[in-house]
Length: 380
Image 1 (cartoon, rainbow, N blue to C red):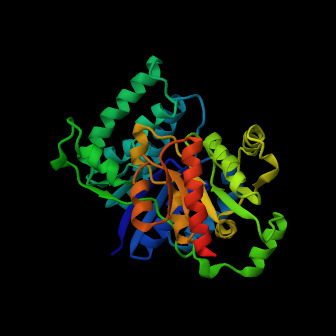
Image 2: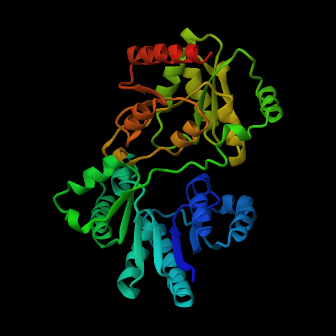
């Protein structure tokens, strides 16, 4: 008899993250005999645009999807309301299906998962995804000078300990974070069962062998990429953590070495911000902007010679595993990235998959570009 599993996600399946990091896992596991019911919180516009497509995909893989609408505002109260909706639906479904396991993606859904364990004995997987409460502070989303946010932060740090010590298994994205957590004085390491599973890449989608040359040539023509252009790629949204100014400065230094360089942003949003930053560094005419559906992303990667991502180093980032790193590696495109983010340093060094930048300075950028040039010349 198939094991019944409830999967709870505060991220939407109609968001890029849900499509890259949740759905491929669930499809793979469902093929191994697990029977999934999935509850996610969907942003209204994304759900209206992509909901039918995602439902068809999940139905075709025997995954029952129970979407809820994400509540955006007011801060804190909206999240409390969403937790209430998640709990009501999870309890209702458990009475019908008698779940053996509840898999909780990050902290918000773990509030519900821990209750299911305590009240009904359901095995609880805490898929922490990172040091969430510390990320909110480091990303300046929670100001600890504000007594409301200070109280919320302390609440989630208490819950974090409770999740870690009550979970049947905890999933960390990085070895760096696992080592840090097991060193905490308020944690009994004997009570924490933890595995490291970094962000995944769908190797069926991100496969150079599947690239159709006629489609690739058509995309080059659409983007007006010339045969001798040197393409630096940024893949994904800009968001809170990615250092757009520093990446643009790197490109401006790179232009002195490669006059034919173009900076391709495969990004769905913040195009105005990208162009304004490019204007500041006098490289606006060398920027290519292109939003992409998920199935188009391997083609955009295939256009590039190198890819870049700089992530703001902070305490919470020891737990981060950039999704794009695995996808770029799968397509054989080397990365230029900074140190002190999760296990990124180790991965780049162990697999010789890119170039590390140790500080955000012109000298450091120039050194990286010389290494990049040597690597590029070897490939030719």
